[in-house]
Image (cartoon, rainbow, N blue to C red; front, side, top):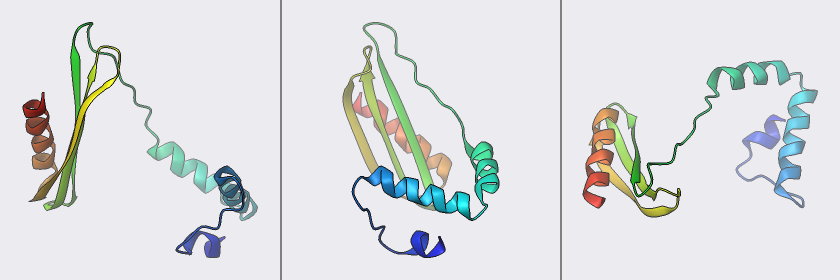
Length: 113
C-alpha cells in the first residue's frame, strides 16, 4: 500500500473510481480501517450554504497563509439569489498572517461587489 500511495503518479486503470476503490481495499486489507474511521470522524465537518434573500447577492470569501505569518492567498465569489455564480476572484496576498489574508478577501470581495 505504501508503494501505491507514495509514488509520484497514480496509475489509473480505467475509471478513476476504480483506482480509489483499489486504495480503499488496500487500506482495509492492511487493517487500517479503524484508524481511518477515527481520523475521518475527527476531521469531518459538515457545512452548508444558504441562499441570500430574493433580489439579493451573497459574498463568500476565504483567506489562508502557509505559516503565520507566511505566504498567503485569498479568494471569494458572489452568487445571486438563485445560487448562480456572478463573479469571483483569487489573489496572492503576499506574506501576512491568516487573519490578514481573511481581511484581504473581505476587502477585495467588497470592492468587486
